[in-house]
Length: 250
Image (cartoon, rainbow, N blue to C red):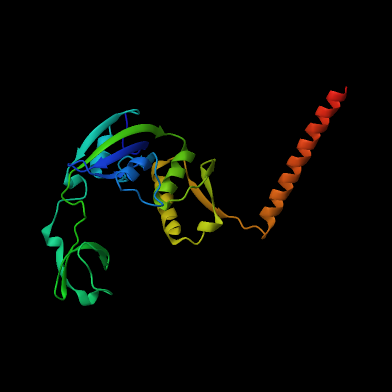
């Protein structure tokens, strides 16, 4: 039975009560229903049960199920994007915007994101509720597998919190992760990696140390390595051909 703390691989499609698809792990389904996002990662996703990687209602529904389960769960607003709160509407002077806002436009005010509901004269009514607040969300989902290997768990934690695919190694309770040069200065990655460390210690009791390493090579060295590899391959092929010719002559 699946329990809190398990790393579970799932797929799902989420709909509103009227059947409108709002999200899917299936790329083709997302494209078919107009919810495809360029650059988004599609395919089965791994979540840690109980850690809030999916909506609370779906997260709770995973518990007690078994691998291979296919089913549906209807998630009420309070366990989805919250109830609709009319108090979250505000009247804001358009002088606070760089450009005159338009109805339906998503805008950011401080740390909040809202939608312009009306523009009246020099003022705009902005709704700071989540666009899906007050909506019931219906998930059709499948549980594909439980991730067991520590290396795979850590790899998925990096995907969840940094969006990057990493290849950790584990030996004697120590995790070693080589940081690729292209992400070493990525602020999102740098912040996310500390969360990953916390999650490693939380979910993998056998891990006592996490080490990040960086490797820098002399410019052009990679090309030289590739050239040597091609040369070795060519020589190996020539030896095989010579052996075949020799055996044929005999």
